[in-house]
Image (cartoon, rainbow, N blue to C red):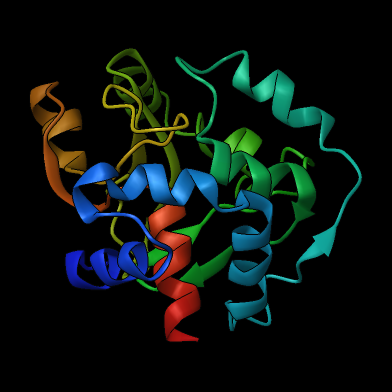
Length: 188
């Protein structure tokens, strides 16, 4: 995450007092597409095979089945790039090829009907799994919108869903996909 100190320093450098803005206000001023382009360049994963695309018509159809649209930053990634499944940090992202394969975003979200029914009804949209191979869904928490339609990234306990029919957030992994992408570009 962007630290409070570095954010406050950045705000002072550009002439604003830190209390005038929250971190999402500053991030919303940045160009989301440029951040996502840098994120794509920073992903060290040969299996991803990122390719620029003109449109991803399957995304509109997919979003019609979801409780809310994808966050603006993630939408920038999936509507401008196609890619195979890849790992980045703690996350194993679903593919975005629009081919309906098991690991494709358009199918993987719904592959386990018990988990998808529970998560989508509760306002969580899965887009990844833990890189360690766990079955826990990694989701956007669409119940807690941030600035510019950004949602926190959370890990849900799959056993709570399957055994107790409850949604339990194991932990919050990032304040938003935009912050996740920014953090990954800083480390590259």
